[in-house]
Length: 592
Image (cartoon, rainbow, N blue to C red):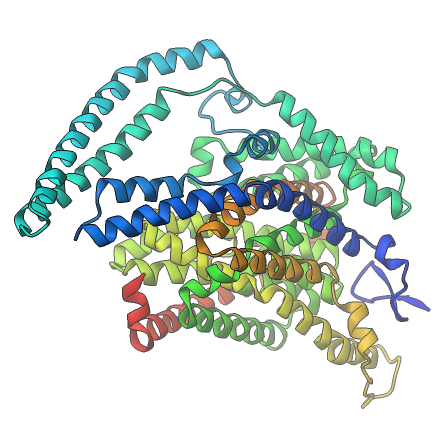
């Protein structure tokens, strides 16, 4: 027996999960596709370079250990070995570079949008020629700094490191060499730019991504030719959104490609109307769920534990507190007409933005218009917060750790968190990104909690209100009902996090960083997840009708709920950040 939820246009089964669901439901196909990508990435980025990287890391560690025992300061040889370790990134392999070429999206541009796709060799050569004098000057400064560092280190060595003055001189000269090395690297990069032509890679990305999603569409019994034709339109809009998002001025204001995908899609849908041939390609949930499975691979337990108990306590206390309090506020104070919109908006603002909104919308069977509204409000305010929060933190003179943790807890989008944290420096960026990663862990937990609450409390109450059952009716919730309600793709999200984290932990910090963080994650899952999100947001925009959204703006309640929730979130978060990072665990803060 099947029925339609009164709050949704989605039909779902009350019975037990069928075996055929494993290949007929998009939740499962998101898992299969996501894991197929990660398995491919394992062989390319981990299994392949693992043995060679182990040898090179062992040699570098041996040199660093010997040099650390030899001198009371970090020698030139020590830094050389350290740099060799830092250069080990499996995404820099030949195969990794080819994958990076394929996954490129439009670059940054100022006045000419063509620059985002194509930079001719003549212009690149001209720019390189202009940059060569500065590069040559930086190289001379580097050579001089290295010579001075070698001379000072030799003097300290000859004194058997017993002369403190010579040791300090050597340490100072080596630090100057490191600074000159960084400057020379930047100058050399500006003088060695390469011509860019994204047309071949974008066309290939279109074909490969269409083929990958078409496999799932075929097995799910959908019309693949119509999907493929529609997919071309969705892909084109996603590329245009990336183009807008990478314009220099627009980017500085925080308007990301996600926001542009929705804005442009809505403009098309509500003016000239979405073309009929594009509509079969609007597979919003398939795209976003696959992206969320890939997002799971980015949540690595070693990174989560790097911040430790303070970060976990701040996020895991503030997030459910804000979610529950603001849901009650929405229902009992604002009198929100839609419980599903209420919970999706609050999951969006309290957990981690769009990702949590998607998972929660699946768990409570929210309408697509409600999800679109929540995502749109979130992206709009995220753009404001990623600019306003760093400015406010600087104006208040807030420490980097506190500012970073506050940003990570309150700004919705992971990308916006990184951008805002970077304004405050590397320490704030590291803390902000890690705290946001810890918060992302809650996506699965919140989705499960919402599924249970909706099945056991909300829907029985709605049945009583509609007169379907008598007052006082108590619904006995079975495990199968919760299972049927629970968004299955979240299992893929959790599984990807566990599997990839376990692999990284088994390899150790250095090798794990080289082949997992700097290989599988940054070389494959992160850029592919961005593509999936771009496709999903373009689909949301193209399928959203302003007239269908209008009833939800009644009385401005969604905006009031979001603004009140963010104010509450920012208040409780900063108090918890101060308490945990500066009162309870100041030693952890001092070490960051």
